Length: 393
Ligand SMILES: Cc1ncc(COP(=O)(O)O)c(C=O)c1O
Image (tube, rainbow, N blue to C red; front, top):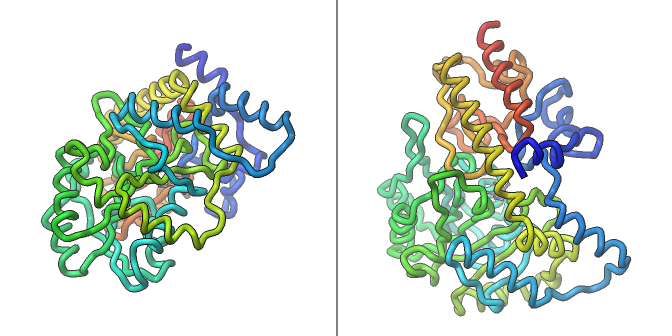
């Protein structure tokens, strides 16, 4: 299917469907007359195969206790093997109702109250809350930033680990909102630091499938031939890949027997860790039949990004459009444009956009905004126009 056919078929008007992005504007931003470019889900319907599989399940009309079929494990493992050389054995896989829930469970399974957990900022804001709200100490290390590109500062990471006796590193890979798809070499370096100081790495790989041209995603558990498996727990899902966030179905992959034993001991106290049948059905259908749909989505994201970068480069060169290697969430650095002014005053009041603000992701990042590009190209054009017009008003 070409891009125009895809857009015609899959773009949906979400207004009036209790959709947080549109219908939640008043609650989040205090007004409704804004173009929503915030939150991380798409304006596209899930692949047909997903909707068909779910519809068949609904038609059967039974929603009793359900087991995960062997076909599910096979389809998921094939997807991971084919794309990322990660062969996942059935025994390694556990489920949760979300990746952030998964992080919370790992915090409880592997650390004690008061223990330090590290994140690399700017990062998805629930990473901050899930640590502090579970009575652990939050240690933040800023990524280095230069000309729209973020990198890890290994010295600062090691120093923070040692000084704070960090027990767990909650990694975001690919990184939201820095837009980086960490290379194997970068991952190897940070994992080596963690290994040296016995830090457990919880690797949130929810954006794994949203990787743009020229970049390669490497799961933490696959880095250097699987050398770090004894310190890595992987969290992922198909919820970003196929736009299924509200189906509450995520993976926990623990390849190491000893780590899995600790997790299972903790999970035995949770009582319910089995799956939601709709989440499982949708995920399986997505992995089995959603490859072409995903290719179309990636093309839309890539084109939206190219357009944004070119147009702002031409008309608003004071704005830096950060590199986007993975995910559909791009940071704009507005600091040169707004000076000491408030990003919200400019972006919301003058440009009429609803976005995620840099300081939500890390206190040093005020003056950045995050835009969601998994959307109608017409909305990206409007957002660009609004930014340009807002800068003249
Ligand atoms: C890195 C990252 N992890 C987790 C989530 C949310 O996952 P879930 O809804 O499964 O908790 C997001 C959503 O944007 C995210 O960017």
